[in-house]
Amino acid sequence: MTRVGVRPALSPRETDVVRALARGRTNAEIAAELVVSLATVKTHVGNVAAKLSARNRVEIAVWAWEQGLVCRPSAAVRGPVVGTVTHPCRVCPVSAGPVAS
Image 1 (cartoon, rainbow, N blue to C red):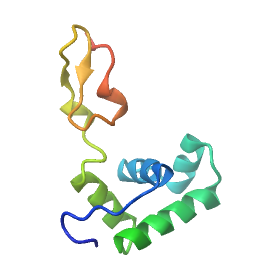
Image 2 (cartoon, rainbow, N blue to C red):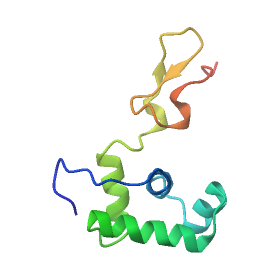
Image 3 (cartoon, rainbow, N blue to C red):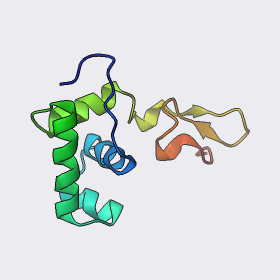
Image 4 (cartoon, one colour):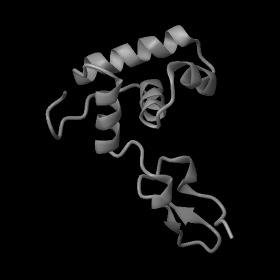
């Protein structure tokens, strides 16, 4: 794994793949979600693994969680604007939206 505090440069698409992988998606699910081929997803996963010196996708997922690339949806809190929520990572789909009643 990469040294602590060192964050390798991932492309925006590699970051998308890492976030999906860290949420437990399979390669096929990631391909469907990002509208790319399965081979493209496998290439991105391989490139990320090489950049992180990760041995498997579990190590990639752990790295993503430790870097704050993904977080628990339950971490959402009421936002400063009435009727919205904010999310600590500011990247998850729940970063902004209506508060569930």
